[in-house]
Length: 214
Image (cartoon, rainbow, N blue to C red):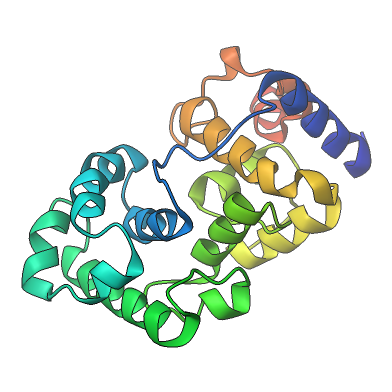
């Protein structure tokens, strides 16, 4: 099977079985998604979704959060991993949005990564989810699943994975393919005990074929 055929199989499968895949983070605005994604670093979406309602009730936008003190915001975040850093990042992010971006979340990766707490992965999430830009955020699920399915070859870093996926995926599907890979990794192609019996991608899976041969 050629790489082109492999990507076509992958795309066709999910267009049929998950055409409306989307993030599991709950939000009502680009700002709220940005907050949720910053909080989600090394933390589950489930935990983030339990935490953000209280944050958004008190700080629904950049203006209100920019006025928060560490002592006011921290109690709302303390159940999240790395709460000290994330509290500072959120306040700093909100202040920069007010000071440099008129309170609005910018929609370019280059601008987003200037914000406290925002790296390339977070910037790719925001631009792809909010604006459907062909950007690929690579987390542990995307990294693992894309390698197992043979969509990437010898990718030694998230950036290498990102570049290979963007090169080979049709541009209109890059933003949704991010969700396909994450959700498949979260619920089917798990790290320790993948549910291969429930997977519709066995025919292109190098991970399974390698186990069979061994």
